[in-house]
Amino acid sequence: MDLLPLPAHGDTPVRVMTIAGSDSGGAAGLQSDLRTFTLAGVHGTCAVTAVTVQNSLGVSAFHPIPPATVAGQIRAVIGDIGVGAVKTGMLADAGIIAAVADTAAELGIGGRTGEGAAGIPFLVDPVSASHHGDPLLSPEAFALLVGRLFPLATVVTPNLDEVRLLTGIEVVDEATQRDAARALHDMGPCWALVKGGHLRTAATSTDLLYDGTEFLEFEAHRIVTTHDHGAGDTLGAAMVCALAHGTTVPEAVAFGKRWVTRSLDAAYPLGAGHGAVNASWRLREAPPA
Ligand code: PXL
Image (cartoon, rainbow, N blue to C red; front, top):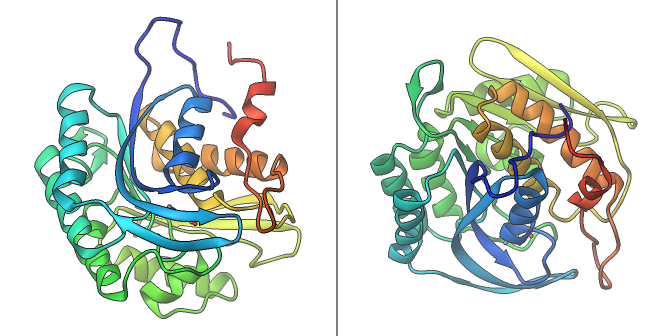
C-alpha cells in the first residue's frame, strides 16, 4: 500500500491530530506533519505546543505555549471534529507534557488500540533535539515524557540519538537494536519502533518494531542526502494517517517507511543549511482506484 484511499469530493475525510511545535523554516514540526496529512488525503488538525525561531541553519529560540492552551486545543478539536489517530512531536516542557498526558487520559487517546479496544491510536515521537542538535526539550521533561506518555502510547518512534538518551544503549548492530527495542517496550508502549537509519549496511535502512513478543523488520534502500530535515516527523505523520484508516501498527510502519523513503528521494535544498524532505512526490501519482 503506497497510497491511502482518498475521500470523494465533499465527503469528510479521516481526521488526525498532531501535537507539535511550529518550525518557521517549514521543513519539520507541525508544518511537515500537516503537509503529509494533506498529501495523504486526511484532514489534519493541530495543537501547537511551541513556536520555534528556525531556519535551515538551526533553532535560535523557542517560545512554549501555555499548557492550558495546548490542552484546550486538543479538547476543542476532539470534542467537535473528532480524530482517528494522534501523534506528538516537540512538546517543549514538563508542563505541556503533563497537560497532554492528562488530556489524553481524559479523552481516551492511547492505551490499547485495535482488536476491540476503544483507544484512539497514539504515536509518541520522543523529540529531544532539532536536526542540528539544538535542544527542544529539557532533560527533566524528557523523563516525564517517558513516565507519563510512554505508558499511553500505541507506538513510540525514537531515532538512534533518542534511543541512547532513553535507554543508555548505543545501537551499533542488529543485537543492540533488539536490546534497545526490548528496553523501550519495557517503558510501557504497546509497540516500540527503533529507527535504524544507516545502521546495518551502507545501502539499506532497517527499522525494528517490537510488541513484547515478536520483532518485525522494515527495510528500505537508504537515500544519501543532507536534505533530510523533517524525515522523522514525516514518517510518524504518515503512520498516523494509516492508523486513522484502521491499519495495524506493522501496516502503518510499512506505509510510513515507504512514504518517507519516497519523500527523501524527492528532498530539496533550502537556504544555506539542511534542506527538507518532500512529500509532494504524492502529487505526481495517480490517485488509488
Ligand atoms: O524533527 C523534529 C522536530 C520537531 N518539531 C520541531 C522541530 C524539529 C526539528 O528541527 O523544529 C518544531
